[in-house]
Length: 506
Image (cartoon, rainbow, N blue to C red):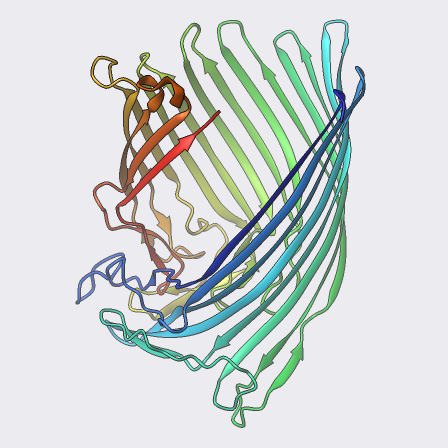
């Protein structure tokens, strides 16, 4: 290669051997509030030691090529290939028998996916008088292949949440007369090609961004169901819907920002989006692409002569064909129609003094189902179901409306411990709803984190770039629930954890 041409090659391979899994999925009673037997410990394992397992393999290859034809024209190209395989065996809670006994349904998920993509573009800068343009024109494609095989043992097993046996032997062969199994396989393929352009125009303190993209997508999906859920345990096959669904869309965006001399920069942006969605519902029907529109306005303020940046923004986002969990068919998704998210964010990043740094932020997000035909039964704390309600107008589950965090980092004076810093902060996550009809709330929680880091170069100059770090998350070991997906799918948050690292940069 010469001074006008460069080539970078990247690659990685990651293998995670089979290990036990536990998704910490528990009922409302015993997590959100103590049951007659107290709270379920976060370390509780309700699966099977001879069944629960997870294994993953991930491989990636990429090259990045650049060439300068002249001072008016540059070319770049990125090629990337990814392939991954996963194998999971786990159990999910399917019901409660009494205050301490629950039913478990074992399932196996075996799948792989591969992605091939190529992005080629021409770009350059030029000036017309006092107006500077940075333009990009390009084309890319992506080929995606996905195959999954999911098996459920519908016999169900009984466990004691406070003293689980952990020795189940699930039966998962649909061709065995001793098993009661439902299995589904699906293959999803899509090819996406697009052409795009962008121009960033700068004149004095004003910057204008214009961009557009045209996409074409061809998608194919097919599969079948296998079951022996009948009196004779005979294996039956049902073909899923096979479909070829071409789609196309033009999306665009525009952004405007003005930089005042005293550090204030107001901005506004509008963008539309088009994102193909892989996978299918439990019947094998593919999902339409996710489309959306976003409006955002905000302010950025850099305090003159100080290392302090303050930002504030407000947004309004609509997304169509938003996917949510299908509660009637675990491990599948359902199309919830259109959702709307409105909110604002404020953040500060400041060096208060030469040795004290602050990072803080607050966000408010009201995300609701704006247009949907879906309904769901309300879920009562005792595990039973109430009347059916529409999801329209309800808040999207597991999305908090309020979040706040701050973090302080202080470098101790050089005379005490040079190059040694301590830090700490708090995270606050507001309440969320358990399901799409907002049956009950998952309470808000806050966590404290602390840490420290040390730069070895102060004492030993030849070790410049070597740094040691120690961090503790959830310092008080608080018991909290991150989210619930109904009465039998509450997830207990991580307890106190200590992290240590030794890094070197050059």
